[in-house]
Image (cartoon, rainbow, N blue to C red):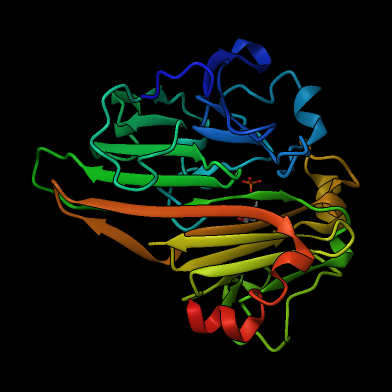
Length: 319
Ligand code: TA6
């Protein structure tokens, strides 16, 4: 656990829930709730919010209380993704109270960073009734010196009965965008995807780049390690780099579904886009003692700065 108070502050957030604020150079910051192990805010050096968090969460009494989940930020989907399985949607990790991991095993990635926090979720007797496995699910959230947000997850099978287990996983990242109709995603063109709006039927992406003019809920398969989200209106590009997470879910509920969601404003779909580094198609299986690792790094840069680096062909080649 980082003990540097300048970079890591433990405090109370909405409903008195424990929250950790990470601070880096200038005004870069990130906020993480122990409820769900969920990042709820990520700000750039200009103090601008980069993640979407529904304004409804502050008005709904139940918003930050189990079994409700926090609509926005980066919910952790584990051990299930979506409805693929018998558990609640996206698994239970996003509405359990995680603990600060005071003595995590060494995490080779981002060791030199000062603004980081290690969290852990373990099996409980209660959860073993619905998912009969012992596990350790670790999450390191770190903020790099230039404001990059880094999430590293490590999941270990600690079963004592010799049994393996399988799980799916996702960082359901809600990006804040200025106007969804002016947003483009690069790096997923020509890939196969499962369309959640068509009973998970498999298609091949035909578009040169992904743009948005209606509801989208797709699981892109075997995706490159780099994906870019271009917010033309704001002239900002989010660059995602991922490891151990082969799939990428792209979701926007659009107007009808937005209206049907009690914890989401009717027009808020215009300001959000979920692009989720995930393991959806193939579950991960771990034998007792085995550990899985997944990692996501996101940067927000001015679009002009990286337009060349984000050439789709270059992205695919370097991925
Ligand atoms: O990740 C995309 C998705 O699985 C969509 O199908 C969509 O419904 C969304 O998650 C939200 O799910 P939630 O359970 O948070 O309402």
